Amino acid sequence: MLEQAVRAEPATAPDRQPVRRALYTPAQRARRDASVWTLVQGLLAPLQFLVFLVSLALVIRFLTTGQGEQAAAASVLVKTLTLYTIMVTGCIWEKVVFDRWLFAPAFYWEDMFSMLVLALHTAYVLAWYTGSLGSHQQMWLALAAYAAYVINAAQFIWKLRMARLDHAASLAAGAAT
Image 1 (cartoon, rainbow, N blue to C red):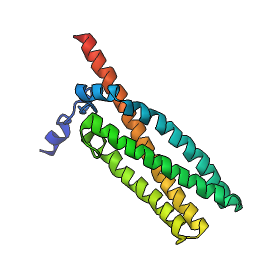
Image 2 (image 1 turned 120 degrees about the horizontal axis):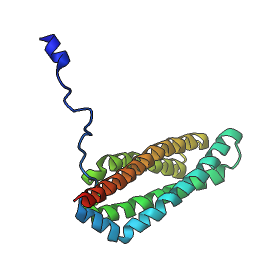
Image 3 (image 1 turned 135 degrees about the vertical axis):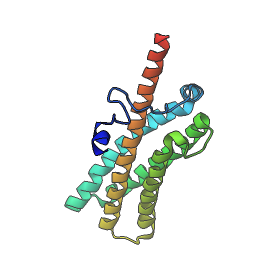
């Protein structure tokens, strides 16, 4: 009996790819492509990344040299403002494309992790505003928020890649028929 189990064919044939649901239905893709909010997201995402890089440099400079505390703190506040802006416009985009303000199935896990990113950035703002943490602890909190942001950005970049692959596959399927 064990010998039969060892010789059994694998559940998925090696030449077959697992079937994955497309990120967008054709109607959702059309809404996405027609929406001004897609352009807004496309502009805000690299802007936020640029703000992140500048802020990261300022935070690291402060933590390593003790210089530039105010510039580092201000940069984290600007980064948080850009995060909130992209989150609000992203909710509008999600409503237009998926008819849900947040947690559309196609972006559920990205949105869930975005909540952690928002919580960490908000915790920084509260610590800065109230002075409940010292400046070094605030900057370490900012770095934790930034680490979460990088993971979340990678999630969204991966989804963008999946959307492009889905579109290429649908074009190829259309050309084959």
